[in-house]
Each structure stands twice: as C-alpha cells, then as structure tokens.
Image (tube, rainbow, N blue to C red; front, side, top):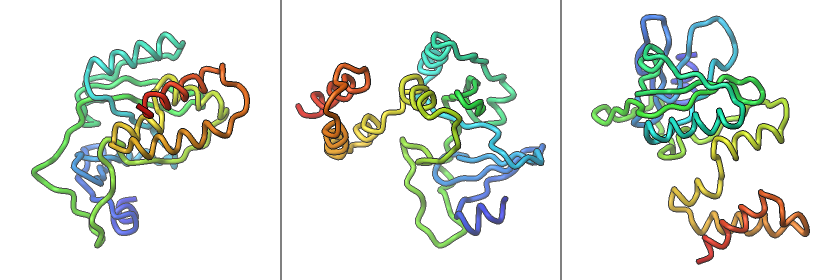
Length: 197
C-alpha cells in the first residue's frame, strides 16, 4: 500500500509503528490514514473528529441514549492513533467506528507530497469524503446525520460557504410538495430561515 499511496494517490508516508502500521499524511495532521499490516483487505475502523473532550463525552452520551454500545478507547489505542482520547462503537452496518479529539498536528514539518501536486483540500472537513457500502441506507442516514451530526449544509456554513449552503438547501427543499411536518423538513426549514436572515 505504501508505494500506491505515495506514487499514485500522492499521500506522504510518515513513519511506521513497531507493529508495522504505516502512517500516511495529506495535510498538517500527523496522519489521515493508518494502514495496519493485518493481512486483511478491509477497513479496520473509521475515525471522526470532535473538538474537545467535552464534545467527545457528549457524543458518547448521545450514542448511548440511542442504544449504541460505546466503549472508551484505551490509552494505548489513543497513543497508537496519536490522539488525546477516543470512543469506539459500530455503525448500523457493523463498521467499526471511532470518535476522537486532540489529534497530533505537525506544523513544523509541512506536508510534502511525493507527487508534483500542491496538496489536498482538508481543513475542518477532514479528508473530505469516502464511500462505504451500507446494509440499510435509511438507518445509516439517520445514524450519520442525526446521531453523529453530519449535515452537509451545516458543514458548508462552518466553512464559510453560507450562500452555497442556502442555495443547495433551498433547491432540495423546493423538491418537496408534502411531508413538511416531518423532522427532516422541519429542520431544513429552520436552517433555511436561519440562513436567510
């Protein structure tokens, strides 16, 4: 994976752990990917970042209230992932997932791709996007949006794309002719009103 990640994808190798795990950078973070030498061709886990320990605790509580089994990460797991703390759980499709805070950021060693590219657009949105197969789209959508708090429009607003969020949300909201009393459309209307001010 190392040569493909570096020479094809343009990720910067950033060392290995004693167990052989390879760290790959794409910005100022110590890594955005860890390739574990398990012999399996599969996703070991997905990590989602929150800003503080308090936000991590609130996320753990929200997941527990929804009936999701949450396990605190050990100090060894946090050290291995180069984060201050984490929780672990499985999403509705059984994909191992983690939420963390306090990632190691390396400002004194700027990202340098092995390929002739200027870099990747990351920032608050992390690595951007990825695609996984889910067993039940509606359950996964509810989990990601309502429990983990992934709202495309809200993410755009946080990144300074208020007008883009307003246009996108207004267009999608305009597709509906009924169902305005559902939770999703009530939330969408509230955000539209907030953005329209």
